[in-house]
Length: 251
Image (tube, rainbow, N blue to C red):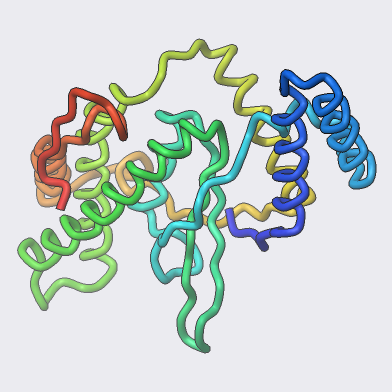
């Protein structure tokens, strides 16, 4: 998703959430005042009918996501995996920093605890995948190969890498039924609808080079297998602040 960030709406939602937090005060008078302020703010900004959907959900930080208008396939696939595992949704924003360059960021939405681990996974894995993909390009392609072939082969390598990493990352997500997942996802979509006034624009993502291919060459299959093997070496700690941590190949 490519969006124009609405900081004013974020501030309003933040104020409403703070009022609701204060409404749980043991002081009855203070709680009543805070609750009244929350509903007054919601009514002023036409949010009173959507409070239940948006007040549990929040926004994360804007994290670096490269310098392309649309996320490249390998990062888009990784982002989709992270959102699914940690039950978040994300938006990307591309801001032009010069005539020839844009700066892209990604922002996760969901429960704060889910956002924290999703951000952690993105910061670690996006850097590691980008590095591993570059190493693969430098060591498994040559000057005679055209750019399209190089990119396709590197994307296939990346898909293998992500497939292996999925086995490691999925153990960090919390268990949830399909019904609970759908209801939670709808809450995040409602929050995003309020935050961006239903003005989110879907970005274009390139097709999966394996799923859409009628034939995969031996060298492309070898690239995928190489990605699978390299991805198996990646290990992420069990939670951000968990007691039983295992860190390996994070830098």
